[in-house]
Length: 358
Image (cartoon, rainbow, N blue to C red; front, side, top):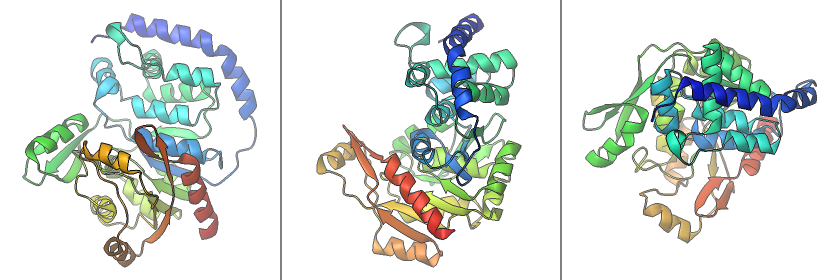
């Protein structure tokens, strides 16, 4: 699929016309003192945007740090054809933190159904147009954040072009986030470790500043090897997390992910994160779901080789030996054929424990 610059220019012009009214209306609404704890959320994918929607009810001081290693789907196409950083996870976080009218949020998530733009989201194209207009991805993110009246900030972890390289247990190496799972499934060899290419990736400096001034750092939920760990592998990021005086929480996933975390339990997830960060102390507390998943959903996910994640006694002992506290609770919602974290319940337990810890 080829996306022309002319198409992107038309899209950004139309979007500016449609949003002019919202810019002034929403910005007037936001002209007030920021309040609430300074929370930084590290991740990517749907898990991160879900959590942001819950946390923004408790604080204006929220920062999302987003991985820039996505190379699949519509983001991958824009990354390859336009030479820009992947916009998808950035878009989702911006919309999650947006105070714009629901109609505008809906438009930004709209995906074209046919033609050369099929499967592209309007929000991705809007970001691409802004990136082309200003020739600056950082400025493009700032512009769209202002237009959508974002509460807080959404920061790419780096402004460099970066890829994930996964080394499997059989020694094979795969480059590219979207290529990893298919090879894992084909070879039946699990991921041993990952690194970034290039290896010395400079972080976006605002990321380091945000981590240094944070009251609370939340890691996850999200894809272990393709969303969470890539952020922490960016130079100085895990070091900044460890040095920060903030309390650090990890949100455990509720299911394993086919081709990525097959056979791993909750303690394995935590150990993988710490091992990739030179065993720095970046997790003080783990939040784990204990709510039972209906049998029909367990069976559905089993067909996708995905298993539910619960904490066992042995796992609890492992985490306690690492001096990591554990909070368990019922944090799920069942949306048709899917199981997801309930953003309201999850945000509440995060804030409750933040208030308790401080």
